[in-house]
Image 1 (cartoon, rainbow, N blue to C red):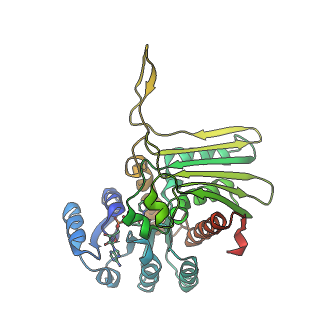
Image 2: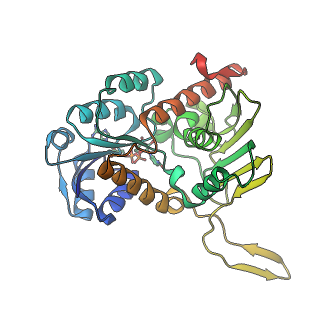
Image 3: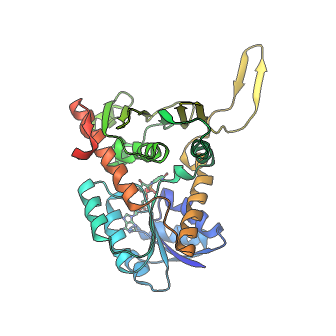
Length: 331
Ligand SMILES: NC(=O)c1ccc[n+]([C@@H]2O[C@H](COP(=O)([O-])OP(=O)(O)OC[C@H]3O[C@@H](n4cnc5c(N)ncnc54)[C@H](O)[C@@H]3O)[C@@H](O)[C@H]2O)c1
């Protein structure tokens, strides 16, 4: 049994608390939050203790921490938790600053226990099936990848201000997905981005609409499209063209009913947002972490994967500002 401390009691922490408490090999011992009332509420909901972050990290009876705090705390908490001998699952991104994330990576090189980054989409059953079909050689060599990722509605201004921007906060998932599928890193990243949905997003210096092209050394190409608004729901699709065919992962819908009448043929909308769409992925992610801890196996998403995706976000940010492609090695 793995005894777990959950750091942070916000939106995503509730999802993780569910996965930890439902897993037969993990127990949620305590939760902390900068705002004590948040920790108390989540602790009451899941029947664990509300404690301080430092107290949880210092507790020798706690084997692993799940870091679900605000992004700007991740590097510090990874370093402190490694020093205390904990196994770690940390939410994406590793940090808002690439420099700080790289420093964190070098500071914890000595870590003997697992450090995994929460790129949950790798564990989505549909995307996982697409990847397995690719790995089985069912479409030959992958040549052109297209990832669509649209949120249902833009976030509030308060969120935009601390998010690190669309590339670090949102598209970072798609950068990691491209690395996962293409099994290589791009040489260059070319971003086109604008703010056309919400004036407050542009006023805060961020973008809400973006297309990014990743170019690989062997000529392959990946295209990622992000928007902060799709009025019909959370649009999450992947299309991969290979030398011997194509793989597509479509949206998961709210239900499978299709109504056909004289007005037309109408189906349900995509599941509303990430909490609805990716619940099975978060559970599978936690299961993969528990397996790595219990069996001493390498984690499926490493700290290095997290830092690389952040470097790609940095390159995309610079490219969108300059209107030139940016080489990944230059960031
Ligand atoms: N993988 C995903 O699909 C996914 C989805 C949402 C959020 N996230 C990531 O999870 C993290 C949290 O996001 P959220 O939406 O839950 O944010 P949130 O603001 O709802 O929650 C963050 C919580 O952390 C607390 N906190 C801040 N510093 C702390 C500290 N030092 N110790 C303890 N608590 C602290 C805040 O008070 C807040 O309650 C972010 O890094 C975000 O990028 C990932």
